[in-house]
Image (cartoon, rainbow, N blue to C red; front, side, top):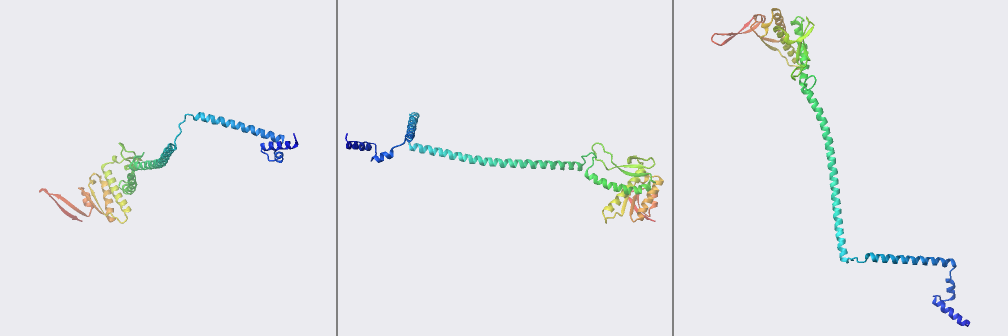
Length: 303
């Protein structure tokens, strides 16, 4: 083969391989390492293509017989799903509102429970105070009775000043702290101290005359206390109805002397009695006489 033919054949082969010239071919020649790299890339590509083909075949097998929805059906399904979604969102919002309301109610119930507990504690304290005030205590003494006891103590103290003189130093009244029976309130009872025996005893054990003297002294003591507490109030008149007939002569004279002293101190003392000694002791008397005709007459006796 001539050189010309050889050159023509070379150009023909280069053209078939996609080269324009021998220089292009020379520039495309790769080293052994580059050729090995390209070979490996080619193998990986072929492997990936085969795997993709297998995956396509598997999907085609899996989807075989599947009914494909039309765009209209897909749109309807989307709208239905969207409606359910919005419905669920609405239910979620309602649930959140209910939860918030439930939390508010729980908080209100907790506050009410705390307030009820506080009110129960206050009620218990008020009931304790009320019970003590009405006498539900170990002393069976109400608040009202406590105040009365305070006044009674003052009355007894004032009464004893006169009773000491009328009894010749034998008797002194004392308020009793003994508990009464059958649920009765205590604290307003009276005992009497007998200096002759050195013992206390119930005022019920006093004789008639002794009781009268004690009663008279208590009445006078009460007027003294009332006047001391009421400031400008003055009790200038006192009426005594009977009782003098039960006194022995010595006690009667002492009682009369006490009443005369009160008169001298500026008080007007009126005595309702049939005892002649009293009639003689006072400078003025209103005498009441019953007639046979069934009516009474009165007359003043001035000395």
